[in-house]
Amino acid sequence: MDIFSTTVEVIKLINSIYTKYSDYRVADQTIDSMQHRLECVEIRLEMFREHLSNTKGGLSEDAKRVFRQSLQKVGDILYDLRDQLPPDISFRTKLAWIGWKKRRVDGLLLQLRTWEQEVGSMIFTYSLLLTVLSIKNFDSLYERLSRTGDQSLTGTLALARRIHGDQNLQIYHIPVSTLIPAVRPVPTDRVLAQYESSLVYLERHGPRSDVLTRMATAFRSPDLPSMHLLSCLGFTVYHGTEHFLVYQIPTLVPGIVNPARLPILSYALDSNVRMALEDRFRIAVEITTAVMEIHAAGWVHKSIRSDNVLVSTRGGEKEGKGDAHVSSAYLVGFIIARSQDTEVSNCFPTTHPIHSLYHHPERQGGSNDNVVMFDIRHDMYSLGALLIEIGFGKTLRVLFSPATPALGFKEANHKCLLDYAHRLSSKMGSKYADAAITCLMKSTQPHEKTEVIRKEFYEEVLCPLQEIMDGFKKKRRA
Image 1 (cartoon, rainbow, N blue to C red):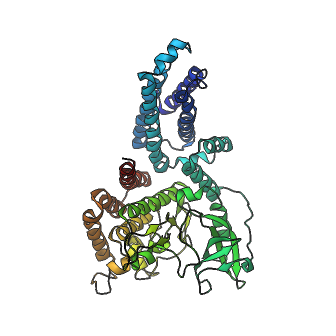
Image 2 (cartoon, rainbow, N blue to C red; image 1 turned 60 degrees about the vertical axis):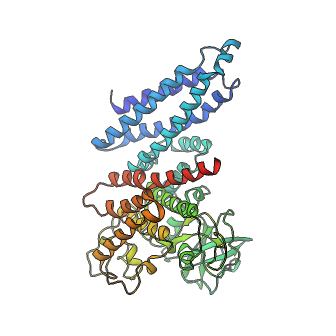
Image 3 (cartoon, helix red, strand yellow; image 1 turned 90 degrees about the vertical axis):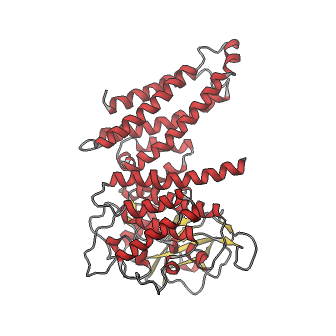
């Protein structure tokens, strides 16, 4: 049986389980919980089906193998689940249901949840979201997904739709007179301000109306904070010519009250703010998640570095005692970001000596160098540099001091970054070090296919970092 037919058969299997347990949902909480889990699984299988039926040129051999293995795994779990359900709802059957079979079903539901997480790799690797955007019943699928409460996947779909859609949505103009700068002096490239009793983040963008509209439209979604991205409220114009997008800062961010400086990670690192090990791992996971989400939605950031991570801290000063209270982290700095399907590079690589350190060797240099088209490999490389900063608690401008002979030579800079990445194992453990090394090494291997890079990024970077955070959570529960 081909992959498409297998997908259809597994969806039919889910429907047979719906029919079999329908009389039990009221009678039992475990049966009741199946509705949510099975719908989550069914939605992902429908995404498989749509992707398989709409992919031009068919799947690669590697993709076929991955899809077959995934369908085999979820099919086995579902068959087992169906066999555990009681044949009737008699009193005697209910008593038996309280025993081991019910516990077995609870375990199978956990296995389905694990399968959903693994499918996240496939959705990211094989660009399933971009295929789903073109289907006729997208709105219905999106509504069902929203009901499941999966904010990450819902938010990514919404972001992808805004990036690649044809909607002529109007963006809201916020009069500059309604914004009170919270960080002085008056804004240059970005600033915090007060707007309607709330703190907002302003970021300068070019005056081109099409770019401004696309950015504002793409990021106008309430689901984005779960992806560690900020939701856009609209735009404002300063001095008649300077255009700024206005982003909402989630209320859960602590400690940002008329700060003297913009609360970014690089400032916290340069100020030697003492952060707990768990907070440093958490920031790494949050920003890695944000990068994965924007790539899944078809976007590239192009400026990933600690200057573009919004995070607030309270306490943890060098002279004080105890670690700082650290907020959630959000990826900002989308000033030169663009869609991955843009046919031309929209700017030359930076010649800024410090910013160049974060850039892939192919993207270092000025207008006289050959410009390599920016892709997700280059974001992945920059993330590796950011992981080094988080791990050492120092910015690259400190790690690469002016006295460093390698400064300015891209091959030597790359070698130096790799050396720092290997040294991370003594500070953050081998999993964290390997994640940083993967970012730096896999992104520089020639002739790597995009889907392979996506898969490696998810499985060898995000998943290991998430496993570290899961370990902290288990330790707190113990």
